Length: 319
Ligand SMILES: [Fe+2]
Image 1 (cartoon, protein in one colour):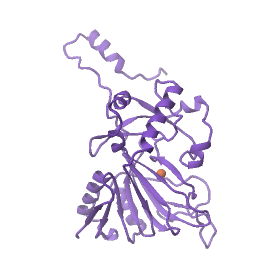
Image 2 (cartoon, rainbow, N blue to C red):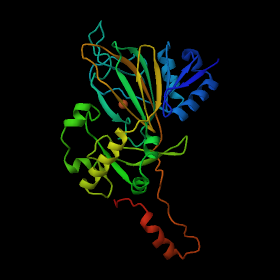
Image 3 (cartoon, helix red, strand yellow):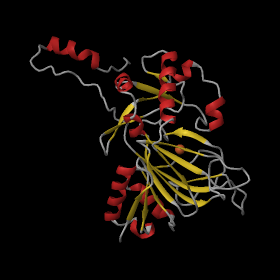
Image 4 (cartoon, protein in one colour):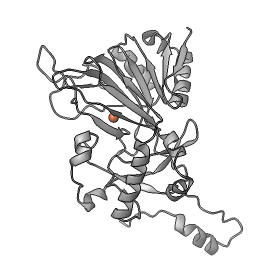
């Protein structure tokens, strides 16, 4: 097997050619190459593939436990017998009329998947089954590069911050991100707290890890200051040139690292169908790049050690 890697941009994305996933997905040597390419380029595209559901889940399964991300309830048809494949589509099954998977054709803003979870998605794989002509574009942005390009003063200001990711339904849709009013403050105090700067474990590089909603709250900050900082960071992010676009066509396979990237997509006309297989693998608890450490208390008396450590200790509520 001779694999040819072609970087799509200097900052993110690589095409691998000379791969036959249906066979190579079971070859440890190939998986090592895929992992190396992902660590370096964050997004790997492999075109013209014929992949079975088993192979689709096998590939993603090398990167972490697979997640059942199909929408609960409803009548959607996914891939029978393969519960870890979520079909994303705006089409209906021609025979039964059932919706073919979850989804719609709306445009989406930059986001990282499943940030509301304690252990968010680590890697995401798509396999395109049908697409309109021309196919809509999906975009990926390298958040380690976005972090790197921040002014030094900003890096210093945000290095220990944590932010609350609150639940906001359909927040990734462009029209909702632009127009929907904020939830009441008490609802924005509930969700999942993550570091604002996380460590990309494979490369040890800091990555900016932003909540989609700019009205999210920075822990310990006022609503107004939180908003000002998140506006500033998102504006910096939106202006970054470190992105790659991929207009996915039938038989394209793409896999990306959700821990150090954000993705977005263009919408397409409702009259045209697009269907994609989507598999997600669990990653890790986002590791703060600048984690708090208890000072070295060697040589101190027990009382002095306790006093020195106290500001860094967590507490559990009494029951
Ligand atoms: Fe997404």
